Image (tube, rainbow, N blue to C red; front, side, top):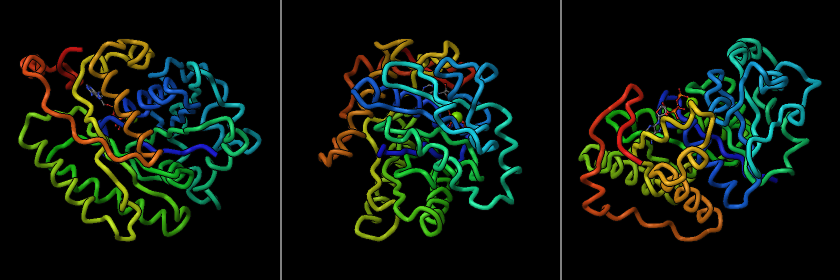
Length: 297
Ligand SMILES: Nc1ncnc2c1ncn2[C@@H]1O[C@H](COP(=O)(O)OP(=O)(O)OP(=O)(O)O)[C@@H](O)[C@H]1O
Ligand SMILES: [Mg+2]
C-alpha cells in the first residue's frame, strides 16, 4: 500500500502546492511511483503540473459527486512515475454538497482504493481550510507534512492544525501522524526565522515520548530558500526540475526528498544545514516581486 501524505496548513500561501508538486517530482525522480491529488478548488497544483482543469474529463470533484467514478477514471500521467488527479473550481461546491452526507470524510479514500497498489507515494495538496475536503485528505493519509513560513504567529496556526489532526485521530483515522514541518520561503539569516525554528523544535522535542499524533514530528532539512524560479515554474506548467534543474529551488527540494526518504528508512535525521559560503550570503535576496519571491537560482 502506498504511503499517503497530506500536505496541509489552513493558512494560505505558505508553500503547500509548491512543496507538494516539487517534493512529489523529486520522489518520482528517485524511483518512487507517485500520485499527486489536487484537493484545492483553486486547482493550482493541477496548473503547476501542466494540466488545464477545463480540459480534464474526470476530476477529483467527480470522485466526490459521482459514485460511478473511480480514481482510475481521473488519473493522468504528467511525467515518468508521476501521475496526477486534477481539481476544478466546481470542487468548492463539494463542501456544502457533502455537508449532510453519511460517510463523507471517507469518500476520497474509497475512490482511490482500486488504484492504490499502483503507487509507492500519494501526495495530497490540501486547500487552505479545515473543511470536509481537508478531512478527506486526513482520513486517507498516513502522515501529514506541514509547510510553513517561520513568521510571528505561525506557531499559533500550527496549534490549530494539530488540534484538527488530533480530532481526526480520535474519530476516523487513529494512526494518522504529523511527521514533518517544511520551512518554506525561508530566510535563515533573520533572527525571527531562527527564533521561530527554535520554538518549533522545542515544542516537538517536548512532545517526544507522549501519546500525541505529532510525537515523531521533525523540522525537515533543508529549509526551502526563497527562490524566484520556484515562483516562475507554475506559470510554465512545470516542476522545478523541468523548469530550472540547476536552481537552489531544485536542489533544496531534491535534498528534502532525501530527508523524507531517510526518515522512512529509519535513518538518523540529517543535521541542520551549515551556514552557506559567504558568496551565497552576498547573493542573498534583495528585490521582491509581486509573489514576494526573491533571489537568484
Ligand atoms: N521557496 C519559494 N521561493 C519563492 N516563491 C515561493 C516559494 N515557495 C512558494 N513560493 C510562491 O509563493 C506563493 C504561495 O505558494 P503556494 O501556492 O505553494 O502556497 P499554498 O500554501 O499552496 O497557497 P494556497 O493556500 O493558496 O493553496 C506562490 O506564488 C509560489 O510560487
Ligand atoms: Mg495551494
